[in-house]
Length: 215
Figure 1 (spheres, rainbow, N blue to C red):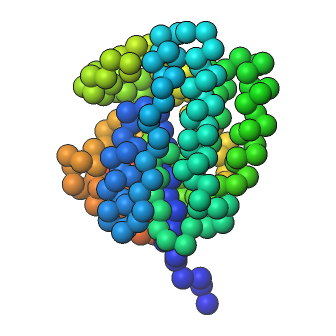
Figure 2: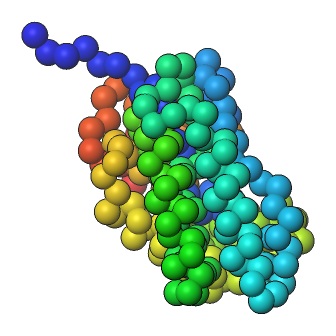
């Protein structure tokens, strides 16, 4: 007798800045009746990092590492009992650490990351939202946050490449990849309906989502 499909209990949504993680996480949490975890955004070292001050990248990264760990640790390394949707994946911390820290700083950072990583839950499903640099820059401009406007196209391109490289090798959870350049879960109801339908079916390994009628 075939196994009955059990929907994912813990979904993490990930992708580069302004790709739509928080919006989709909020929608899915509401539809699933799940607890919503939003990534900690308060970091007093970020402005110094954006301004290029020496040592600010390390301070900002360690602050984020502790904040992300403290938020996820109460759920434990096992599977959460209640449905949970988060708008980030803990491993993103290492992605940005490798982008922003020197080798000497990584030598200090890595033991803390490994210690924390073993104490948090692993998602049943990760949704990776993609978008190209021009799309992300347009969304950043619309958001009009002064610090984010300091992000250069070159840095954004590095972030996009780092995410693509990470998820090309990701195997800890089932993975659904979505290119958001032509998909709008807020303005186009049909896109959202198709995604919700897709999430009601099994996702095994790495799969890609493209709404019907899109090339």
